[in-house]
Length: 132
Image (cartoon, rainbow, N blue to C red; front, side, top):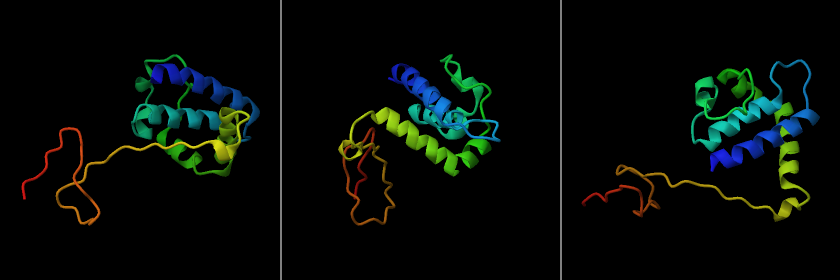
């Protein structure tokens, strides 16, 4: 799925990046967003996406890649939020924002030493219910 989704996202990032530019920065916001999206698509940490060796499967990548500290710092700034809003508007198209709903989640394993009274046993990959 990543191989099909990444080219679409990359070209949208570049298109919005042409419109939304920042002065006095080495890496434009689209580069920071590309690194974060690459990490999210592969379920990896952001530091993994900052390593050029992990981009070997695609030719669509920013060059040079920013460092992890640059991505972390720049992702907290207002200029990056402006870029993400512009990207969201472009990806959403002409649809009304109130009609868009996305849910994403992953079940997390709960250890046997839990203290949450609402935690229950359920289905999980290779999960074994402890004997009580």
